[in-house]
Length: 354
Image (tube, rainbow, N blue to C red; front, side, top):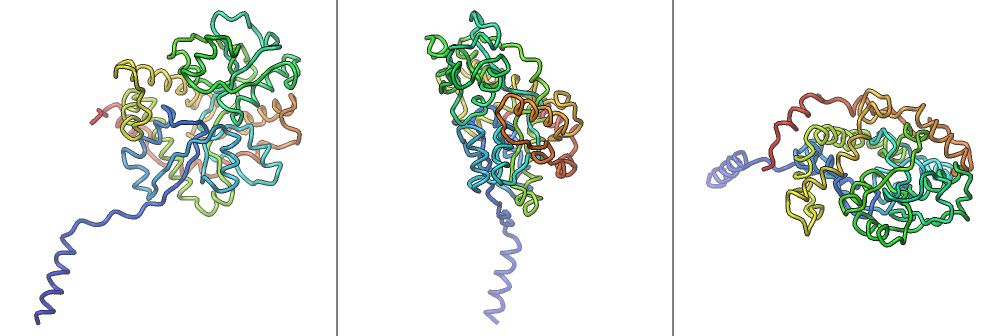
């Protein structure tokens, strides 16, 4: 009898206890830069607001110095997904690695050559004999610099000198001292350089503006075997992107909360917030759907990808023919967009840091 009472009491206590949180699957996502920066805001928002947890995943961001290395890490299974640029993908697919972009994050082209505002360099041909700074030798900036030099009739192997210039303030310092003459980086890095006090000017390149930039890359077998997980990673990012566009300041404060190392030091909070919002605004322009002529978040325009592949082949970056259809898939886009954008925007506008 005593045993029965004890068992009954234990069962009652168990019923009253709060339910245990469901186990979450750790998912490693490569961000193709040396550090986690303001660009991680969509991930931070999805984490902070519980969207990833609701889908049973815990996203771990893994800094990787450049898109080339990001794609290699996907190929070897060191990360599940990577937010990589397009250029390394056709190169590695030609080596037999079956990976695809299943979500285009940056519909506009974030890359290009920038010079200090007062530089004598006015066109790509003026880069002959100049040093061009990239964030790392594994970055897409290396490929872009070589292709754009070739469009001006330069020999990328002899006529330009590509060097590592780092990021942000380090890059700005090298420009000030003349150790680099130009940069082949991307929109948000250029905003960070300007925040560090060096005003920049992009060399005109209208032919590249419609090209897509980074997207989520995964092995085809991952997309098949872990479809729900793949959708969840991209959907959280899509909702975080919408939230960021609607309320950049709140997005930065959430970023600082989730990834404290991203909060700038040596600045007062107002300046730090304004500087990071400027970085986000540089990317927001290329997040928007109209940049790619698409209607759904993450949708990949085969026409735009085909044009970029043609460009890379024309200027000798790609040695083998690869079709756009081999690089992208829109198979998951319907499921990724199965959320209410208006609700996410309203949530963003009503959000106050707490």
